[in-house]
Image (cartoon, rainbow, N blue to C red; front, side, top):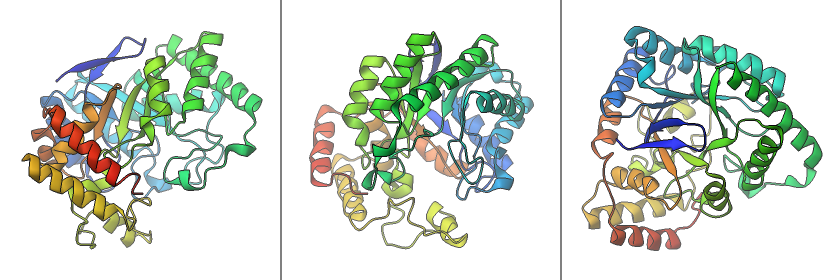
Length: 351
């Protein structure tokens, strides 16, 4: 497995990350531990989690459980030195804390995550989403930044970065990353860090897939010039690109089915739109034409972007992860990439 160094941090990670957001809800402890064993055997050493995980649904009583599962695995296997761990502090949320985070809160949340993870250092500490608001999670259709206060935002960034600098100096974190951020926000975090001598942004975890390519323009340019690596979540479009929703009925145990069973809309966070099935069908037809597994093609696409990109692969169970790992080394030809661009032009922004 190829390894990438994140920005100026000196933190080297595997070129694919294992996501753990279902650990503790849809994925029980035994299966979660087996998935982490399988990932490590395949050379995937980079684990991504968050204090609010597991999700689908997010519940107060399960907040932190995914970190606890990782902590138990680390304790049982004694292999902390073989993996890199990324976790996140939650932005404003009714399920965790309404105010999101500031310097004082982050000092506490880092300690809480370290305790749950049973480790003394977090490799990449991320801000789950900005406290000023975000256009992620389909909020781009109604995004309105006009009420933002620039000076207040910059003061907040300095406060947070000051706390992160202290945590880094204490050896509690190695690097700092963003999530669900914008190009302007990413650039400002870099500027403020440089001004006060705090840790620079080295990663940004945003949604990215064949069907979700908002990142391709301003964010990609910012990331290239500031040496920020994209950690691409939902690289299978929350399961849409697997084709399992093709007939319109969510399979038992799927993310949409679980959401429906717990009173949710079952729309995969707004991804199950009228146009989405057409895009999925087009990508599946292209994969068939190229003689490729559509899941493997989708993940390979994220690894071959003209900017640094690490796909986060996640699975509800070990059988799904086994299938993902089987195609992890696929390299798409230039012709395949050109044909993918043709499909993208025919089906842009389907959700």
